[in-house]
Amino acid sequence: MSRSPRLRGRIIAGIRERRARNLPKSARASASSILLDILQRLSNEITEAGTDWVIEVSPDLQGKRPRDETKRLVERVVAVNRAIVEKNDREPLSSFIEYVTSLRASLEFRVSTILRGFLSFKRGLAQVLLDEPIRPRQRFEVLQIVEEIYYEAIFQISDVYGAKLVHTIKTRRDEIEVELGVKRQELEVTAEMIERLRTQLIALSLPILRIWKGVLLVPLIGEITPDRAEHARIELLDAIVRHHARVLLIDVTGLSVVDALAAEALGSIIRAANLLGTESMIVGIRGEVARVFVEIGEVFPGTKTFATLDDGLRLALHIGAKKRS
Image 1 (cartoon, rainbow, N blue to C red):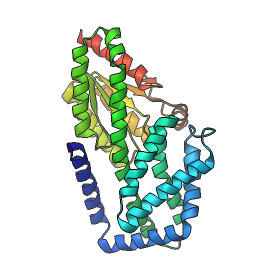
Image 2: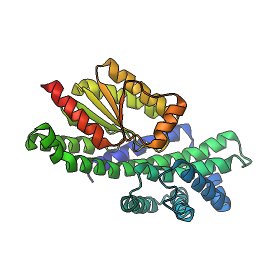
Image 3: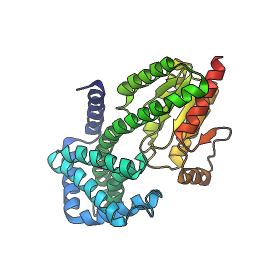
Image 4: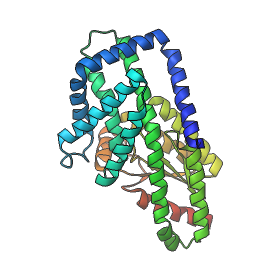
C-alpha cells in the first residue's frame, strides 16, 4: 500500500473515532436501524428528491443528459450507501467511483458534478427525514452516518482529481516553457515536486501544490463546512510563509456546493493572503459560480479571476518569473 492510501485510511479512521465519541455505539446502532428502515420504505422518494437536487444545482447537466439517466446514477448512490450501512461493504463504493469518473471523462462533465452526485443521497435523505416521526437528535445522528460515507467518497475522488490536475499541468509544460523561456529541466523538477506534494496531501480534501518557485495552487474540493474553512485558512497561511509564496492560485472547479459559506471562506483566505503580500487569483470560475457570488454580494475586489486553470497558471508563472528577476 502506498503512502497516500495509508494516510487516507488514517484520516478516515480519525473521522470515525471522533464521530464515535459524539455518537455512542447504542445511538449509532439506533440511527443505523432508522436509516435502513427508511431505505427499505422510501428509497424511491429519496432517489427522486436527490435527482431533482442534482439537476437543479448542475447547469452543466441540463440539456445534456436525460433525467432518467441522472436518476439511475442517484439510485446507484443510494445503493452504495445502503451496502455500507447494512453490510459494511465498500466494494460498491469503489466500483461506482471508477464508473462515474470514467463516465465524466467520456462526456466531459466536471468533477464537481460527480461530487454533487454523491451528495444527492444526503440531500434527498434530509428532505425525506423532515416527514419522519423521529426526534431532531435522531435525524442528526442518521445524517452523521451518511456524512461519514460522503467524506470517504470525497477522499477517493480527490485521488482521481489530483492525478488529472497533475496531468493537465504536465501537458501544458512545454508550451509554458517556450513562452517564459524556462529550461525544461526546471519544469521537470517542478513536476516532480508537485508529485511528491500530491502523494503527501492528496488524501486530504485540501491539497496545496507548489507548482513554481513562489507560486502555490490549491484546488477546493467538495462542500465547504465551517471546520474545513478554518482548516483551509490555517494550512494555506502556513504554506504561504513556508514557501515564500508571491502568488496563490485558488481553483474552485471542484466545489460541489457554492453558497454564502464558500464565498465567505474564499474571501477570508484572499484577505489573509494579501496581508502576507501574496497576490491571490481565482481560477475555474463558471457562470453559475459567478452568479452566486454576485447574488451573495461577495465579488472579491482587486482579485484576478479566470475561467480556466490554464489562463491563471500562465499569468501566475509570468508574475513569478518577473518577481524572481
